Length: 307
Image (tube, rainbow, N blue to C red):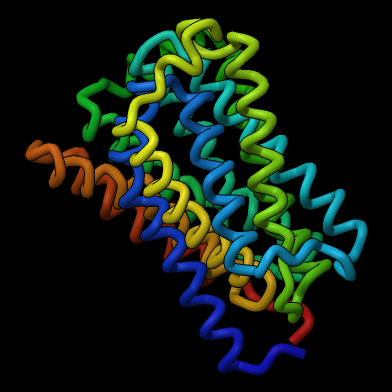
């Protein structure tokens, strides 16, 4: 049984993960432009996994449930491979944003899957809440990048396979979050460092094979000291973010953190505008209002059916 103080602390860690993921987007874009999304992702996740293992003193994942190690581990790796491949296969900025939007189906799916996997119950507000929040994400992303919603939707119609790949990843991440809560609820141990290192190795293989933009021949030559520094900084932030998320899924309020996750693209857009000196338009603030309203409705609609 998880006491209320542990649950509150774990929930705060989940909110911290959302902020960490949001503020690193600008740095991730810079690294991706330098070396490509697959190579950049490989560097980040190898660094993040190594940092996690160092923090754990090099301890392995012995003693953890096999279904968590192999089940959740596979979901973790496959989610990130799906997402990075979808980004790498995107033809232009509008398509990248469409991929990002498809990926952000996961907060709604996390709440939905919690009904079956965690015994939660939901009221009728869950549907309008999810739609409002997703609509807010769409407005915020398009406004922050200067791409019209019609361009994003047209890209999805032209090449649906790329967007379906990102949506498939969203399903995997929602399953990962709920199954972590179900199989590891209350436990302090984690194999997330090993999951990240496996992801990094898989992304490295794809990059070397030339499946990302620019092919694989220039992979090793494309890394500069600046790119390596960005990968290390991102690895540190990524390690902290995923460790916080993992702790939140094990002990925190999954529905609340999932509803708050809608703010990730919104916050990342705001931080990017501030960092780049871009003045956000009205669409961003309208999206903000929709995300706030939708997230609150989604969270309020869900309750613990076992209480």
